[in-house]
Length: 223
Image (cartoon, rainbow, N blue to C red; front, side, top):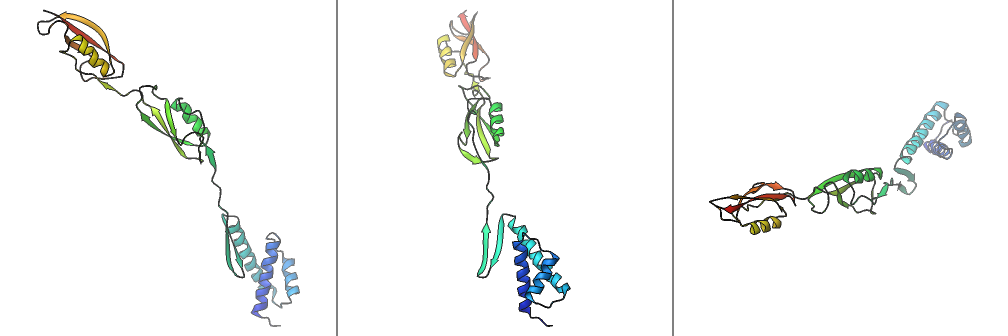
């Protein structure tokens, strides 16, 4: 018996629908049943080929549906449903400021965050102490975000002023203004410098010292 393309198309459509509604399972018995019910006199080989095409379409539908997008054909057009994968977020933890950079890094890493460290000079915080964090603690951020720690590198270096040739009082004031202190003072006779004038200093002028470091002075006692 002859058959029409419309009958075959209807059969394929019903096979597809049956496979889809049966959780993608379509047996040979189902195929024979469909062929009988639709009364389409198609050879079994052609039925199997059509079924294979239907199942292939179904499997393709499964692959897409299990991804981030599922596409379903409708009679009025094509409808696309997108389900975006939610990116995890975490809270920047507390307890990372005013602690050591090693401790802060461990806390942030355990929260799922990466760490970038920048060093800044600070006269009030010991070297290695975390002064600030960006983003701030309590902020909700994407998991795996890199958090920046501002860490004290200690006080910035101080250049020693030249106080040779100044009297002791002026030399002390110059050192204090530079953030240094007067260390040991020794006297020695000098025919070049008047009494009370600084003859030499140690460390020498323009040395790089830590803030608060002391400078020893040798002061003339006169000839």
